[in-house]
Image 1: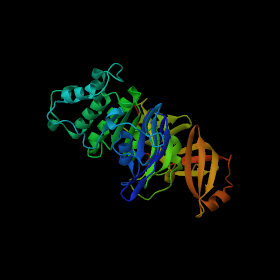
Image 2 (image 1 turned 135 degrees about the vertical axis):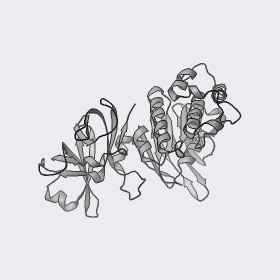
Image 3 (image 1 turned 90 degrees about the horizontal axis):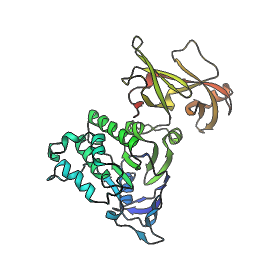
Image 4 (image 1 turned 120 degrees about the vertical axis):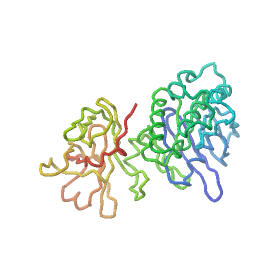
Length: 364
């Protein structure tokens, strides 16, 4: 387990995160600028010393103020990739990678160097110097160097923030391959919703130095509060499905999941590709029976799991389809008029046009 509970004053801000997650998979740390995301990574890495609390990864105590334990940064076996890669400019790519291997005992490497080079696609770059690399290439080399040091956890501080969209999606693809191939836990700081959808298995949401949500992506996303910020996360259902077919005449794609099938605008992934879909709260409606004379074709039988009165004239309805919880925000009088209650059988209506490239991501 990754067990974090500490406090530290940083200027006028008090960072006080509490996190308890499995020590596996990729965890996205999301929040506005100044919320403490990078400072959290720095505390994990030993670059910031908490005033009180503890930091534990599995059976290893990295920091514990009560027990007076504070492992030095260079002894924590933590890989850290910064926004600017920080490669040694006078060394070749191969020499930068070799530096990572020299930093630790290689008797039980988490991955062999040749395999990692293939996974990251950096074989053709080995003789080049960092100054000749693109931003995405530098980050892939930095990730490789960090992993070759056999870290117990890999920290990534917004590695895609300076990349254009094409290079960003390219790096996302490599990170998906690493996630599928390695057992080392990864903690990724990001402010981009697409990164969360593409990569995260767990999600930590931070605000003003505190953790406001923590858990698996599918469990956390429906619990988020609505936000007006364009780049913020909003309450949403998260589901994983498989592309069944494309209809070129209608320019649509059919995705099946354990609760049925969804039709969405044609996407570029081939049939049989596994995809992750995000269905925001604003794009879901509830009906008591199927509706023929309506433009919404995605109509899924569901059961209401819970209804929360928001005390502002609206209510949030949680309806389960298969293993996925869809959420809808309705007027409170609509809930009463339709006689919706826990256990009611309903129809979840999902707008297909909203399932665009920002709400669909292929999974490796």
